[in-house]
Length: 279
Image 1 (spheres, rainbow, N blue to C red):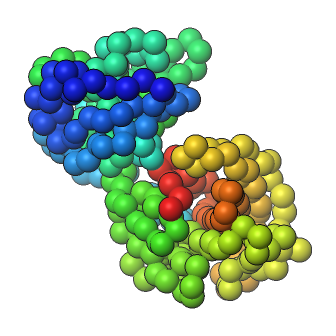
Image 2 (cartoon, rainbow, N blue to C red; image 1 turned 30 degrees about the horizontal axis):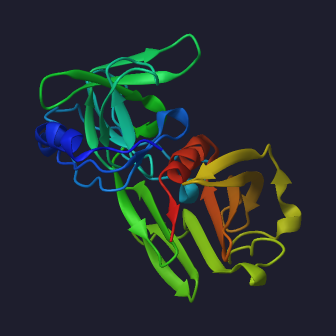
Image 3 (cartoon, rainbow, N blue to C red; image 1 turned 60 degrees about the vertical axis):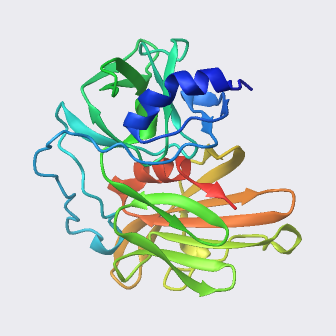
């Protein structure tokens, strides 16, 4: 764990004031992902982007399309930091390059260039308030606006327009402006009382009809979990969808997350999990 001294904080104070953030203790994390315990605020880009693009729901299953307003794939363009505890900005596109600052979740950026290294890692170039150019991992930026959403057990950054609605004690759903189906179902409780399998939300077909897809290991904050993916067919609309099922456990509690998305939105789930922390 690397700590930031008072002198270093003072030296960087002017830069971070321009960015609308404050720097605190920083802890190294995978993929150049860092804990920023006292980061806050949002830097709003001066970029005037082209008209944003809204993904077309198509004819397959519009009720499970993840609503998000994507920026055109041009440079320059806006992007948003979605790492749950901040992301480093470095002097060069490498995790070993000098760290210039750390940006908080939700910070809006103006991307000036993109680069893919021989190892496959993607990096985005931005300009800091003091005029210096910096690079951050493209793994932790989205090309659509995000906003915080919380339950009593989970904080996560969702595409703008989604908010949680409480169902019963320990259960909540995140819907887009009162839409018919939820993007995210959350249930939490005492670890010793966790059900053997995640409870299937009302409106979804029975688990016996689900078709298993490959499972991936993920991190939610510092906690490891499995993202189990299943193909389903919604009875209400007669169309295909995907379920991402994630169980997170701590010493005392369990947290069950079910994401309901269309096939083309499946990659969004990884970005949402990157931004999540359990409470």
